[in-house]
Length: 293
Image 1 (cartoon, rainbow, N blue to C red):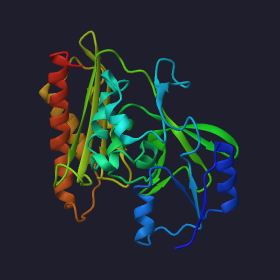
Image 2: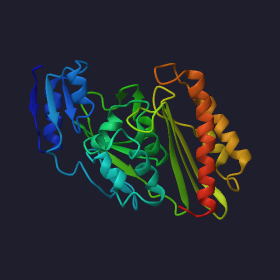
Image 3: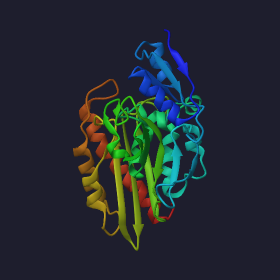
Image 4: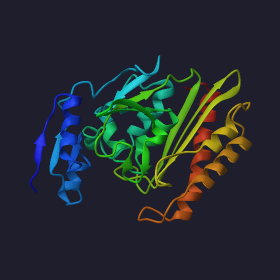
């Protein structure tokens, strides 16, 4: 396969190359998906634009969008997300999810932006970013824009980026002090496997009441999905009771729209969304009760 390779050193330069390619270019970050796709003939770009020479697209530091929040650059390695000391407290769920992705070797190459831009419904970091209310910063010919992650995905393998925009990174708002969350990855194996389904849940409390509830499910719909109805059942209530947990889990199960594929049948995946949501919320209840947050 023949293709042209460019390594721009600025976002504007990369955008110019994208515009010039008229949709025939692919962006290269970690390369763990793009290179495999090229090898098997699934991806046949005329141009590869290597983003790794552009400064400031990697790293974790204070957000300019959310006061007191965090920014994670699109080129930040998954392994850096997994082990980042900044991702503690209410942000810990993202580090946990990053640690479930593929293998150590792949996590050392793959990037957070790549995992999200690949737009697989099963992306391990997507549901955790959703419960963190992540906002994507995007660069285009018209300038910079900010898109809530729940509006970023447009379908399996597609996003609002199209063929002419670049993901800069993710802005995460500050998390309340008493916050606990967890990510449950359901799969046939414990490592090196795409999830059959994934559930991320996060709860914040103050004065004994649930002030914020977030539940997201993956690999059971065309895109990773926030379950707003289940969240609404929990918010404002006095603690995570078994009745509330079971009700939220039932709503999450009803929201799932899985298909039959090689990883599992639809009926099984749908049922397990309810089971794993119940497990996640029960775990969080224990964390909050013991203040292990």
